[in-house]
Length: 450
Ligand code: GLC
Image (cartoon, rainbow, N blue to C red; front, side):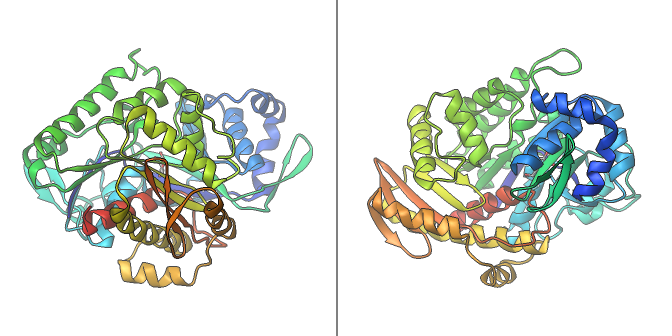
């Protein structure tokens, strides 16, 4: 399988939050944090804004990614948290490219916004080839040189918090209801949906040899850029690029992975722009709720992880935009709602099982490995009880076509595949699991053919 991957890659600095220690650092900013929590700023212009984002996620067990608008806050995060973090590949595209490469794709061609030696050192060396000055380079060639953390690295701070940890907010002790993460991002290149010219040229010239393209990074777009421009041109440039790939290779399968959007305008422009081009769109329950609310489709039940609500909403969005498939990945289950006829759904079903196993093993070990190892590791990991119960409950709602550790069902003119996830009790990190699920599913479906 030859697969193009665009657009975002960065370095994630993963910091394990300890409630008492973070409460202590925050205690200098109590009043400002309380004000920020009353009216969430949604981006970070000051240290209290950062704590408001982190604490609101910890309080509710939700995930979010906020942009850092002030370089001083980024420097403050670097001095306070970089040393205590572990660094690894970040960015949906970077993570997905590594998954494809380690799981056995023959050639994976990523767009690399910042080809520093340190960034390159995080790319898998197995099947990733990087277009560079007319040649295809392995990442190991490009990671030679000084790979210490230098100032211009694109580092996103990922604050991972644990279920059951406690922290102090407004003098009260709060218990974290669910593990999740808050990401504080300062990144001037990926904000632009930056496409490297070597990558774009290679993609244009070789598109007929490609089977698939995995696309992500749209959630990093901004309403306003430092030069006063907006996101419309940047989005258009990317949509034009994807359309030209499709025009030159109608068999190319494109999967677009969404993220936590900075505004409803961006979310709706990206979604409606991608809908006619992408064969499949991947998102989590928060992102599905955001889109449902924008298009006045009912979102009730989604955040309670009700599988039937997820199916209804995904199908309504497919109706509205004529989308071929929506893939929803949550902590408890993964659901594909697609227009594919039921026989091919068996392949999707197999791909979903494969995807959740790879993600579970990655969550537990923090490392990618070849597929046999990942599948073997995942066999030891328990299925989500809630996911299993929800999927079993579908029988009462819609006709089932097939059942085995998950179901294939019919809902209106859609074919639904739903499988429970496997949950690791002590994940190394929860970041990038959606990307891992989506990319493993994408690869397996390409291999199985439609
Ligand atoms: C977003 C973040 C990135 C993280 C990724 C995981 O793209 O910017 O830091 O690795 O999400 O899905």
